[in-house]
Image (cartoon, rainbow, N blue to C red; front, side):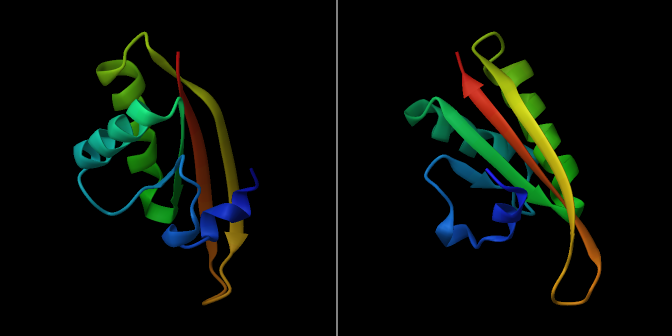
Length: 99
């Protein structure tokens, strides 16, 4: 999975992808748990100021809610220059898998 995929709109995301939104971290964690109930793999994607939320969600899911039954398989980081305003924007992709 390429990091440029983070720039895709939410409607284009794969069924196992979850784009972190500006909402409660616990709400996002519950959404990810729900997604993991039907899939063994969930890909968290976030950019810019939402990266800490993605890391928190991954930790809540793997260390609290599904402790011992899930793990972080992969983490990818990247920065791209925004086409809108020329500012550099960081992206993260965190792949969670259920054992």
